[in-house]
Length: 473
Image (cartoon, rainbow, N blue to C red; front, side, top):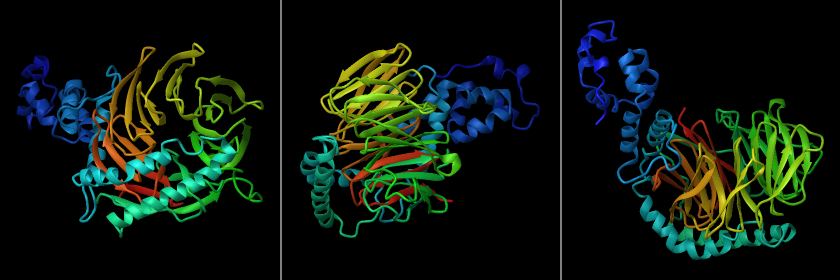
């Protein structure tokens, strides 16, 4: 039961300047809190504090927000899965309510959360054995970069043929699904090969960057649904000389990493003008960018730290793994990296040394880290959560069979969780244990990456187009 606050409920100290509705202010604290818990989170955060000091106190009550979160995620689910000290409960509840409202109202004939389980079982029965065998080894990082491209071309053709046969048996007239509160569209085809990475930039979900196996990086206006430009010198055949495998951005700085062993730097404030070139020693598989510091994970097992302002940008090269580095995430204190060697490493940036290294029974292919909470996807379709607090890193939970093949992308915020996989699905969840899946999108081809910003979801896949879902305008 929530604590009663006599000082706020006594007649002599009532903060209300008017008599209308004053009786409401004399109700017990716990009853008021229960009433407020049924108001939209946005109203509680933005409106109630302006009414009176009592309502402001209710809007700041942590226990009331925890009760609201419990109602949203349902019984027998843990939340949050990372450190709870200092957790922003109001923002988490606001995000969960907005996500639930956007992704649970389905149109007729569209698969929503209620029908997800049957379709998921159908996908697993047919796709798990063959697709996992083909894809779980991690695309493009098995026998060297030169051999990897030819191997992946052949591999993708086999997988797509198998999945096309599977799809024609299950759903011959397949189309991408969406809840009724969202609109879906595909940006015009400007690539000639599969997309391996997408990134929404600018803070409003209005600009999207796509990287493709055709070597090009394209800049899109999402609102107008038009191609702004292909980055690079117009006189060159493509932006990079190899597949574009990863993207990262901070402010106006955009970075693109490629199988050609380079990272190219672009200035978004100048319309995508080139800012510089970093020459590495091996294929660049993942990037993370904070201020002027760029982190790059590569096929040669290294995590390289670059200063994007310097003429000689390499600051330090870290050998934290025994195989290719597949994913990176970082903040001002730590660098987290996942590798094909089935390890997850945490490097302490201030101490300049490896803090901890965990071994798992599968390799981590994608990762999202913020606020001491880590969500990661592996090559078996499972999700893992970790907690990083006060210099101690530990495994919290593992959730099996969220997907049935390699988890290629993951985005987590305080109240949202998006995942995608080579099993051709994109899933929208509440980030609790176990994840509460609100909606599953069944795609025509393997999904290689996703990006989320301001409620806009962008996806890159084998069908060469950027797919976008956003709240109806």
